[in-house]
Amino acid sequence: MPSPPPSTAAAAAQQLESLLPHLSTLSHYKQFHARLHALGTLHSYPSLRARFLDRLALLPHADALPHALLLLRSLPSPATNDFNAALRGLAASPHPVRSLLLLAGRLLPAPTPPRPRLDALSLSFALKATARCSDAFATFQLHAILVRLGVAADVRLMTTLLDSYAKCGDLASARKVFDEMSVRDVATWNALLAGLAQGTEPNLALVLFRRLAGSFRELPPREEPNEVTVVAALSACAQLGALKDGLAAHEFARTIGAVGNVRVCNALIDMYSKCGSLSRALEVFHSIKLEDRTLVSYNATIQALSMHGHGEDALKLFDEMPARIEPDEVTYLAVLGGCNHAGLVDDGRRVFDSMRVPPNMKHYGTIVDLLGRAGRLAEAHDMIMHMPFPADIVLWQTLLGAAKMHGNVDLAELAATKLADLGSNVDGDYVLLSNVYASKSRWVDVGRVRDTMRSNDVKKVPGFSYTEIDGVMHKFINGDKEHMRWREIYRALDEIGSRICELGYEPETSNVLHDIGEEEKQYALSYHSEKLAIAFGLISTPPGETIRVIKNLRICGDCHVVAKLISKAYGRVIIIRDRARFHRFEDGQCSCRDYW
Image 1 (cartoon, rainbow, N blue to C red):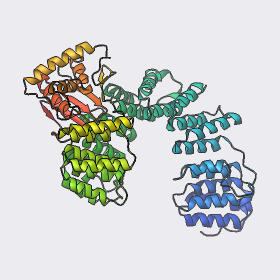
Image 2 (cartoon, rainbow, N blue to C red; image 1 turned 45 degrees about the vertical axis):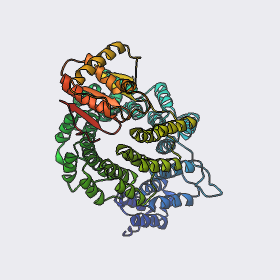
Image 3 (cartoon, rainbow, N blue to C red; image 1 turned 90 degrees about the vertical axis):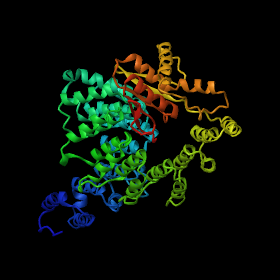
Image 4 (cartoon, rainbow, N blue to C red; image 1 turned 30 degrees about the vertical axis):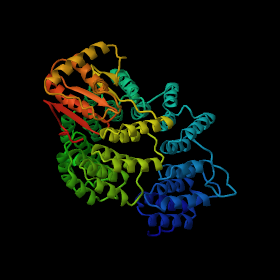
């Protein structure tokens, strides 16, 4: 970097100020730092120093932030702006907890120089760190400091506080902050909507969104919804599978002119896919100009195709990605998932072997699942044994599931032992092992597994299903008699049973985990939650309307057969989203081609 001509200190500072935006490498920043020292401007021009520190702390170089902290520690009396620059860099770093340590003075030299006075920006950066750390207690402490400093009227700061509570999972506190704010802006609404949508209250997020969308023309300009509002609402719709609300959010996006925004388009792709409308998801993707498509656009669409069983199309789109877009971990996971759901073993291995990013546990898990489903259990086990890191609980559960699918008792027992060694004590492990024993009529072993579950106080997660009728979500559990129309539903199930028996239905009772009579097994199968949801859909919607169901567990074999036969007997399209994928039933066939 050339030396500035001799001039007054003010002129030198002005020249350095003009150079600051052009610094691009750590070497440039070190030279600039040296020039600040040489010209005596490091201490005499604190605003220039703070701007330099701020840019240095955010430079994407491993040694940049340590250099910024070194500079901060060298200052005899750092100003608040210096302190904030370091706080901001640490909050955005891979180790945001260090921002909180700096706030507590533990990263300053001993004896500690006079602590800079905290301001709203200091707390804002610290709150962003607590959000990234999911540290609800630290957020609560910062909330107390905020009140003590008298900055609770700062809308931006309170919005950051709300956002931190929400990202830490404390939605009650987030809502309390929102309710107590006398002045809000659109960022405040967006923070609460996103927190609710991505947390445990997506229904409430949609209630708030409807309130905003219904009155947005009367809102003050600072509170008018924008594309971020729409993205948060679409996230809630995707989580719930609420297609009617998703369509309304899409229409609202058109109203405010946000449909051309690529972030909105990406959220629409994800929402339509997770609500079971693949055709609408693809329509949105193709509406984005080729040059405007982002990595997220491709990831969402590949994932949509994969979840709906279109593995070949997912592979094709993956191969057509433009050279300017580099696939990431999510891309590879999505395309491998497509190969898995479609049984494309060789293609899956090819993609896995050609990955340009190091495969993580999820990538290995997908390949193990792909091999296991295809019956290549020895290869799946070999893959686990030769990974560069120890297999986690999910990977052994995947192998256990493959062993259950193919009735391999030895491999199931091996996987179950590994899970026990890793401390897993979830009901799914026991149920899968019980399924393997039950499929071989080893009822003594089934009883032993159930005794172990009781002694370990393990309870089976109940299956439940949702279906949306006229914008209202209805929930059903196995054997449910709580719904206000349960008698009609049960009568409908009786009629369904008669009609599908005419098509050759025979209950698949092999995996009912009790040593009971065949009639009792059939009764146990008859009232699974997805069957109740489908029956309710049949009596609540006009002929020919698509029935959509969301299931918290993987659909069982008998329900899969029943759904295929109902689609044929009643001329309905039935779309079931289970824990792993989508099943589209039409005219007696399923989009999974019975490979799931």
